Image 1: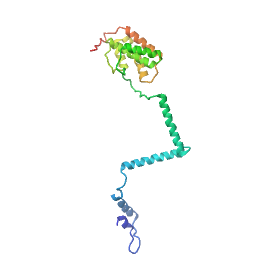
Image 2 (image 1 turned 120 degrees about the vertical axis):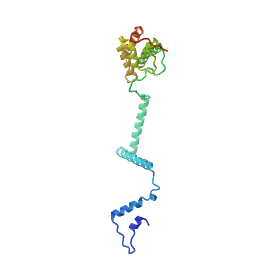
Image 3 (image 1 turned 180 degrees about the vertical axis):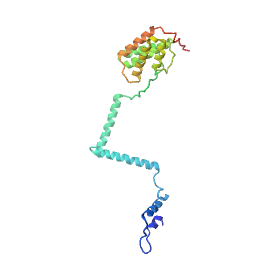
Image 4 (image 1 turned 90 degrees about the horizontal axis):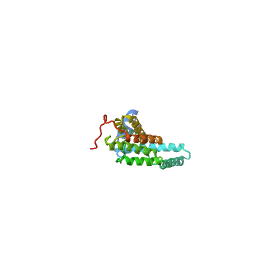
Length: 224
């Protein structure tokens, strides 16, 4: 006979055995702690999953109880949200992650300065000022590399290029910094390019093509 059974047993004269409450509870707990009673219990992971599904079920039940139409109304609202998200996705296109800091000036293998200028002119003619500014800035930097005034660097940022170029052309250092900020704003900052910004960048590119570098502070760079 188990401990619990012994506690609940009656005497031969059918007078129930009276056991104090606390000892009886302790005996019941010892009895129920026997592994035989728990060999079919779910493992801790399953218990956690069961608890989670119960909470989710309670949440949906509560939502259905406060939604007009009950479960049908809740499903209709969920379907409407899904359709809205699909419509926004189709309308806005692929979501692009915007870096929080300036990245490389060249996203691909650089072309020649002339090729970037031609691309910039095409973009400007079609009113695509962001792309026009990007290609014009790349043309400006590549032109200085082709003149061996800048050290070629595919991973260079616009800020780095403008700082290095400013040492070769001190008179244009402020305009170079402005050009770098403009490039970063339209490329990484999410700001739209403008015709005015492109015109200023184009004028700087043209001026640098005819400007003489200050070789006393920045000697010619070797491409080797």
